[in-house]
Image 1 (cartoon, helix red, strand yellow):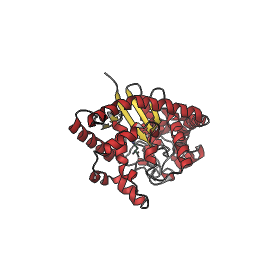
Image 2 (cartoon, protein in one colour):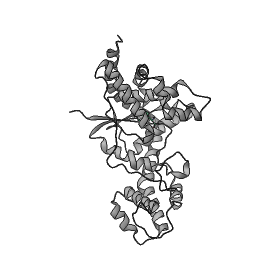
Image 3 (cartoon, protein in one colour):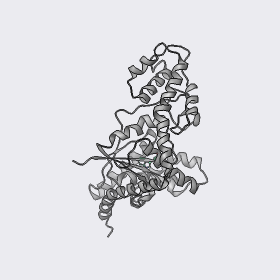
Image 4 (cartoon, helix red, strand yellow):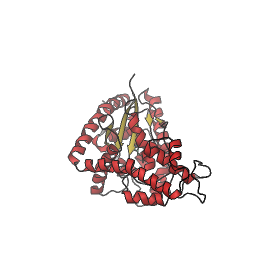
Length: 329
Ligand code: TRP
């Protein structure tokens, strides 16, 4: 039996935060032996909002370096840049003939983005989910690890694939959301009732590339409670519980072991110790690897090229089937 395919797309501008890292990226490295994993830096999606060419170039290469630094091995996974393989654009056009204006107009991301950029509501922004469907369907992807904000796009991908298959037979694999078993849900330091997210600004997340002093400062400001006891009780002590969870993850120990370290200690000690563990075990080593990689852009370009070829080898087979089915000669 051949391995199942996992596909994920990442925006080139997005520096992940520790919530993305512990919740997703860190676990992706464990998938590489059991699945055929593709990770695509989606520069074609990025240009649906205006980009400065220099920034886009820099962000795209940096994103590649960052995901490799986070532990994705480019020899065991296919990690590449969307625009390096023209199959994405090509399938996107073909699929656009099977996507309805009405369903695209209902996408909440489109509605939000057009409200935020009223002077640049372009066709690409409208067709964004069709390109995303092409990304996924191009590789016969079975599983797609995505956050809640992208579920609507995956649902649309499935609808388009099913619609196409109903006309032409079993061409596309119908993808599903991939929910990893161990995916941790890291809370905000500023508001431990809520999931860590970038939507409300810098102060609310710890970025993977945050310098050590910034990480320390953010943890020192972590919201806890007016009590003094350290115990794991997410209902009543969300902040303290979240810090204990982060410590366990950063040190690779159980929650019990994490609690044992801090029982009877003070909140101040908890905050700085957790911060230091995150710095020593997560952000510093990733940043060291990242800095090493971006020093050598030619090497990164070479990795991108080899991996785009791997993507092409898989995608072109599907593309041929699709074109044949439609009747292109
Ligand atoms: N739209 C996704 C986001 O903004 C990125 C993306 C593009 C994607 N193509 C994809 C995610 C395919 C999963 C699968 O996060």
